[in-house]
Length: 124
Image 1 (tube, rainbow, N blue to C red):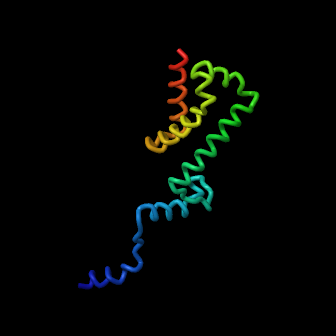
Image 2: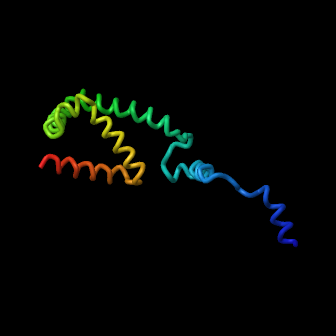
């Protein structure tokens, strides 16, 4: 009976939360070990797509406008065709790559290697 009484008294002290809330608490406590900003925010899926669209456009425009990428641009155009670049299909592929990384849990390095392998296969 004493054990039950103790459990009842300790219930208000229990950390009861959703899985996401529990993880959020851990991340906020150990942000410095993980290497993220202490004031990070969890982004909703709808917001993620909006941000991803904006970033993919920015990256595409940077790539196209950077004169250091002219040779890379030519290779991409030769391998995948000018229509691929002009239709901005490349931006759709960037978003698909992001979704693959998110779904599979690959690191960015693993995804990069996978994409380089795919491109090399297309070039041969």
